[in-house]
Structure formats: structure tokens, C-alpha cells
Length: 280
Image (cartoon, helix red, strand yellow):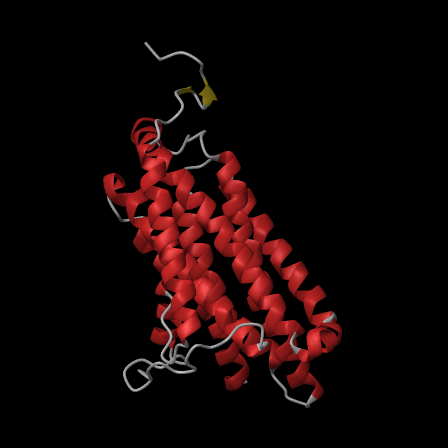
């Protein structure tokens, strides 16, 4: 039971941290709860389908089907997060003003919200499929107390994710969107780095150095702090050179894109509706 609870905890924690950052970044946007809940439900459903198709994935691309699938899911999440970061860079001040004046009745950003919250489904899909596959293997091996371990691991991972979300909500409103945007940039860079690792494992990319350094003695990848740092900032105790290329390139592109987006004048709106003339 302990091994089951630990593995489920680590997988749920990864998804929960991503969901927490997304939920905080969309604070105040109307109907976000429906999007988040729907994303989680779709992710769970997709995870079951992926687990049922495990043999097909394993046989695809010379046995590297699972690695390629994980890389595609991660890169899709990077693109969606990047789009939201650029959108927020040009609309963050407007949203912050609306949050101060109208409380939670923020009408802007619905289109960006839909893209970003798809990341929730992708996160749950990737981590959930690994949990389902692991539990299936444990059950086939005759292990017991699977449901107890699943419940304990899920509750513990979700609790840490909620703690992060509660902490983010305490950030003053004038700094809130800047902080969450920065966290999303680091999150996207970390996901891109992890995608590169999967592509290296599938022999689709060169490693450019399998292990540039080893900081496991300080912070191991398998530890809870290491796992948390891995999701939030892309930490890897034993990174390959290609992972650093993906990480740095993602940071650079989003930083440059955000700078350009901030220079563009935002479209005037009244109650969330675009207007074609200046507001008096």
C-alpha cells in the first residue's frame, strides 16, 4: 500500500501543481470553475483510454510510443500556456483594474481561458494515464490495498496543490498577474525541457550531453521538494544538453513575445465588449 500511495501522490502532485497555477492565473474570470472541472474530467477519461491503449502505444514507433505521446502532450501544453502568457502581457493591467473595481466579475479573457484550461486536461491526462498503468500492473501482480493507496496518494497530492493555490491568492492584486505570468513562463519552460527528455529517450533527438551535472546529492528528482521544483521551475538533477536548449529557448521566446505584447495598445472594452471608439 505504501508504494502505491507514494507513486500516486507524486503523479497527483504534478497534476495538482499545474492545476493550482492555472486556477490562480485565471482568478476572477467568470465560469472558470466549469472549465477546470471539465478539464479534470476530460483528463481522467482520456487517461483511462490511454491506459487501455498501452499495448498499441508501446508497439508504435519501435517501442517508443509512450515517450512520443508524452512529448506531444507536453509540447501542446507549452503552446497553450505560451499563448495565455502573451495574451496576459497585453491585457494584464486591464484585468487587474477590473478585479479591483468589479470583484470577481471579470468578463475579459474567455478565449484565452479556454486554451489555458485545456492544459488542465492535458496534465491530468498524462499523469492519470501513468497512474492507471501502474495500478493495472500492480493488480496483475497480486498487490493488495490498491484503493486505499490510491485514496491516500490522491488526497495528499491534492492537498499540497491546494496549499499552493491558497498561497498564490494572498499575493496583492497589483502584483498578482505579474507573479502568476512569471510562474506560467517557468512552468512552460519546464514542460518543454521534460518533452525534450522524452524525445531523447525515444531516440528522436540527440542528447548533446546525457548528464551535464548531477545535483541529486542536494535535491533529488524523486524527492517531494525535487518533484515540486521540477514542475514549478523545470528543475532536473541530471539534465541533458538538449533539455537546457528547450528550456532556454522557451524562456527567451516567451520573454520576447511578452515584451512585444506589452508595447501593443489594448483594445478598449466596455463591460467586456469591444468598442470601436475611445471611451469617454
